[in-house]
Length: 262
Ligand SMILES: [Zn+2]
Ligand SMILES: [Zn+2]
Image (cartoon, rainbow, N blue to C red; front, side, top):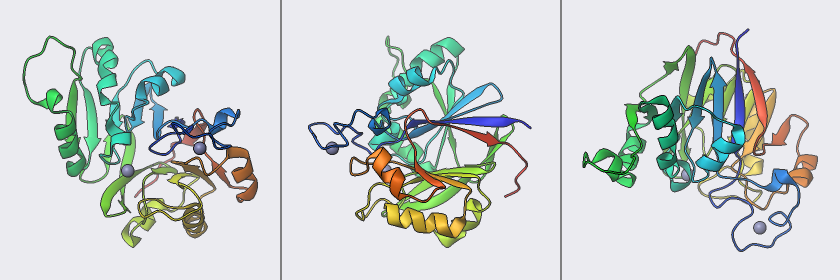
């Protein structure tokens, strides 16, 4: 059975952990799993590398993961911590001698056009610019035989997309999942989802809210990501149900690519 290898490139909140200037126990922790870069995942399958989001840590994440090519980028939304590494795809443009296709909701593509106007303005430059090919997501799509199903959710007042692929799903930066998206998250083996901290937050799911979602959807395993410095890795895991763990940078999850019709 073909399979996909998912790597957690980053598991931290927008400011990362350690958080600049903070000397709390988690920021000072010697446990490497308490060192969290900004949230992103790598999907490696069929000789291709697809990343979800390009964080400000994209370069170091790609180095750590040993990424030797980049075939596509999917964007969940246009917040700074999810897009600011886009400029760092240039070595892959040069190596592969071509543009990298990027996929996002139309509003996310519009944000990229504003934030990275120099990529889009057509002004000739002596500098190396990222080469991209934009694709607006308007429903499920296929990349090299992998069906990717966008999962709409809300991130405070902002729409955001998660992605379902086979029996796994990735849903970061959300505060609410509409009923219409629930069927897209059923029958999962692995569910990687936002759980910022214990205390509620208007833009993010808390540990309690994410546990309630896991209880309802019953994935075999759940992995919390987008974690802030309130949650120490070992102590939080000790308090979570057996099938729910904190993700950490570098974690790899094998996803069998069985036929799933959605
Ligand atoms: Zn701290
Ligand atoms: Zn966000």
